[in-house]
Length: 214
Image (tube, rainbow, N blue to C red; front, side, top):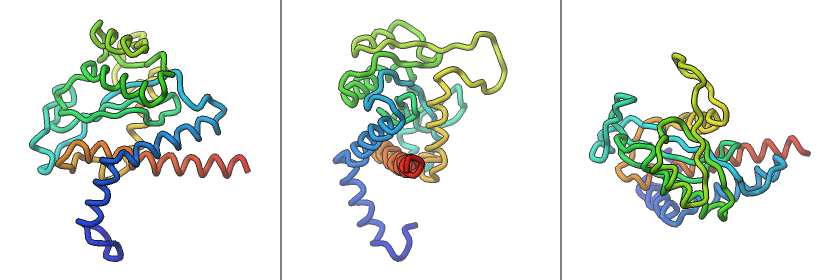
C-alpha cells in the first residue's frame, strides 16, 4: 500500500524496523513531551500519571498471539499505556487481550520512572487495578495508585476525574488507520507504531503552541 513515489515497501519496512528497535520514535516522543509541558507552564517532567489498557481487534496477521477479552467480547491484543496529565505518552506495553491490566503495573511503573527520572509519585487508575498486588508493584517504584471510582452506579460511558485524559489519548491513537486494528505480526511493531503516531500528534500540538505564542 506504499505510494509509487516512495521506495519499495520492503525497504521502507526494514528501515522502520531499525528505527523501532533503536527506540528512535520513543525518544522523539519524550523530547516533544518535555517541550510541550514547558510550553504549558508545567515542569518538564510530570509528578502524576494515568494508566489504562485498550483492546484492539485482531486480524489474520496478529491472530497467533491474540487473546480473548471477556469484558469487551473480542479477540485481539491489549495495549497498556501510561500518560501524563496532558495525555502524552510515557510508557507502553503490548500483551494478548486476555492479560489483566493490574498485572502490567510493575512494568509500566518501572518504564515511567526510568523515563521521567523518578519524578512520578501518583498514578490514577480505574477499578480494574484494584487490589494489593498492583498497589504494591507501583509502590515499589515510588508510585501511589489512586483508584478513581464512580460515586454511584450508572449506565453507559461516564467521564471520571483525571481518568478521562487517558481515554482521550486512546481516541487520538484510534484515528490512525494502522492502529484501528492489530495488523502487525510482531508486538514490537505494534508498540513502535503507537510511538510513531504520538510523534505526529505531539509535533502538531507543538506547532500549534508555537503559533499561539508568536
